[in-house]
Each structure stands twice: as structure tokens, then as C-alpha cells.
Length: 187
Image 1: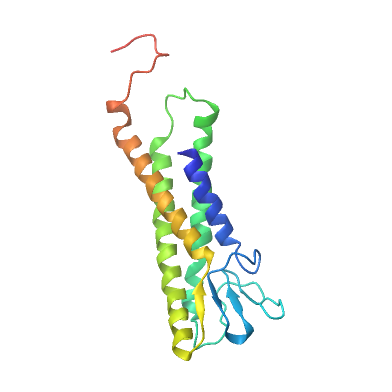
Image 2: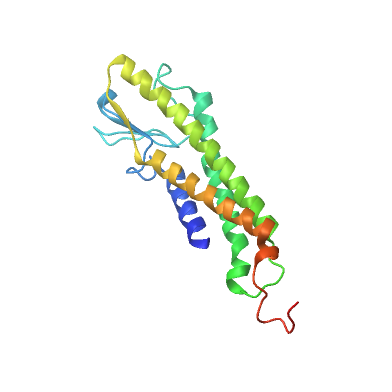
């Protein structure tokens, strides 16, 4: 469970620092305007390698994107932050494997919250960039989705599995598990 949560967190952090920070990770690429790659904090022109100022809620042209929808992409870093908190919640179990009263409900709630925000971020991201994609296609430009969308989808799927696993461990963990061998008695 730790490795799955760690992988989802790394994917979300990479998506958070997409174009213009990491230029190979972008949401949408188009050949319009000399070639543009859209990221979370801005966009970069491919022809002259110039990027926009880093801000959330940017617009290239008003007819192609809406700043209000772009600002809802703040869910991506929020989801990454919640995933980091859930990851930190696992460290006591890694350091002390025989910890009897591990906070399962806290871990479950954090992973559930990370899962829900990641799914919401993916849906919002898909709506925003599918709208931009359809508007670009309507004008006659070619455009395609980038790797950031699929990275966020992968992180969301992994977080759903981790939240389900943590929920099963929280709700059913003490009822059907084996008796610990380090206790002096068995009941």
C-alpha cells in the first residue's frame, strides 16, 4: 500500500509541476499559434521556446479557454498535498511494525479525501482541456492531449484502490485477521 500511495503521490507532484516548470509534461499540445503546450501554471510556445508568466487561471485567447475553469485546476496540487499527508500518516507503521493502535481511520479518511479530490481534479481537467480541444478543432487547428492527463488518471485509479484497501482494513481489519504472535495469549 505504501508503494502504491507513493507512486500516486509522485505522479500528482509531476502533474502539479507541469509546463512551464517541466516542459515535457503538459495537458494539451496544439500547432496553433506556432505550437503551444498547455500546463497547469502556464503555456509554452514551441517555435521560439518562450513561456507565459507562471500563474493559475491563464488564458491564451478568450475564445479558446475560460479563466474561471482554469482556476479550478488548483484541485491538482490540493490532491497532491493530501496524498503527501496520507503518506506521512503511514510512516509510524513503517518505523514501528508492531504498533498496536495504528491510526487506521485517519489514514482511511486521508486516502478517501485524496481519492475524491484526485477524481474531481481529473474530471475538471478533462472538461477544461476537452473544451479547449474541441474549440481548437472547430477553428481548424490540430491539437492532442498530453501525458499529464493520463498521469492524473493513473494517480486517481491508484488512489481509488488505496482508499478501498484502507477502507477494508479500517472496517474489517480486526475481525478477520490472524491473532498477533507477539501477544502472550491467544483468545
